[in-house]
Image (tube, rainbow, N blue to C red):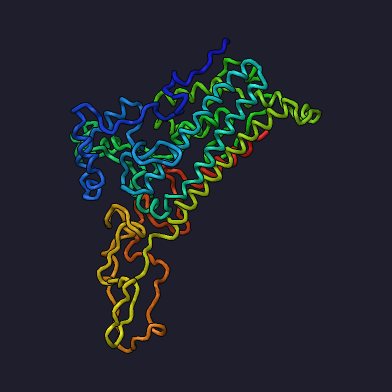
Length: 482
């Protein structure tokens, strides 16, 4: 069959911005029809804190059908600058810098990897023309793109605090797929949609069928990593099962039978996550899988028997090295992802929510001398716990959103007075601030932001066993090396 070159533009993919839109997102929708939505977004954080947001928005499903994607929260860019990129967030759930930074890091990776998408298209075409030097060069360009992705991902730690992310932000990113442990065994019912208002408890079985199970925001929902997987021939299998990478015989058959499409990705979760992508991006992955034979080309061109006789500057040696560099960088990226999940999800979930203990100050038996002019006395009795780190976020404490800052679970902060001591600063007996302690009364096992016991599974926002899934995907990547 004749080869039809793939064009990124045919799939709503930008050659310069990759899977991001070529134009910045609108700050406001100009059509007056959307004015009520825009008015909600102007005070979105306040509505969330006041628990008013549910009754204000019920039209997301209709819009999602038009966009060919599932009705679940996504992110956008513009406004606050991200270093080296003209990126920022327009709206966030929490209003925190940590949340903005989390989105901006992942968005910057998408922007920087546009070069890699162009290189993938070039590599596919070069294989069709049996141009070994061009295939090698395209793989080298893909490697440069992956180097950028690794570097940007490491910057997650700069301005996104793990404690803030887990206890304040992550719950907003969660979905309701495979979330029985979080108190959502049936998913979520969209009231006022699909004629749910016509149902009653008398026909509850029909009503339960109307519940929807959607995964939350997940890195698996970006087509970027799946595109690199397809380009490099990295296979992923159902979690908990082992598979086998393409053999030389399979590669030979696939190269000879150009009209035979590549079987779909075997990991059903990754396939399911394509439903959360724009339609054009999803079709790009499907068509790329049918057209890309880069790994097969490298396998046949760079067999071990031939490479044993080749020089270090042999084009075949350079081709295999370029391919393996890409695989190594994909593994490195996934190693970093596992480290982030460990630090931002596993560790906070195991340790539980905590706050600093109160400081007990001993009062002197005689008048306290005036404080020096260059020191400001601390009024411990009037201090309050705010819903953020030292320095404070823009949000106040809220016992529902932020249980770790629920001051109702804490004894009133006050000075504990003793009269047995004289004012002798060097020997004054006062307790020091100790390490954080678990918040009293926070024993809830429901919700995504919750403390886990030793045997509990830390699930990703997509509902998977996060660590098992990520480690298997990482290992499958490593085993792809030639």
